[in-house]
Amino acid sequence: MFKKSILLFFVLFSTLSFAQTEEAEKQLVKIFELCKAKNYSEAANYFLYEGEDAARNLKGTYNYKERKEKIAVDKIGKKIFALLDISDGYKIVSKSNHDKNGLKWTVFNVAFISGNQEIEGSFYMTKINNKYVLGSID
Image 1: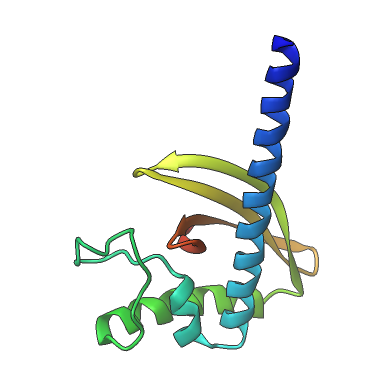
Image 2: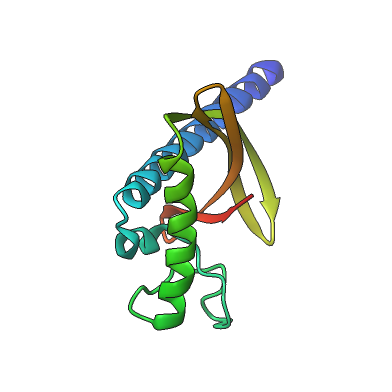
């Protein structure tokens, strides 16, 4: 009975982890679509705020109406746009989960493909306020 309980635990844990990764991936694709369309004001709702406001830092998203935050969002959005614009397409090469700064991160390693060349980037997604948001790009 104990072995069955352990097996059931791992099956449920794996299923939950897969569902969360799938949800994060859908959100990443949405972010790519918004940036490809240069809709940075909407994309701001999916970028994790990292800034001077300690109450919001790593807890909310950017406010595109604030000048400093708009600049930060545009920078992130343009970086993603550039990767998509020079590519014929992209593929997610790998996915992993990590804990950092008190947050759970799903990391997507993405290859942007242009002819025979590939540019790889890592996209860090975390869940805040019941939605996945992009924390950083490496």
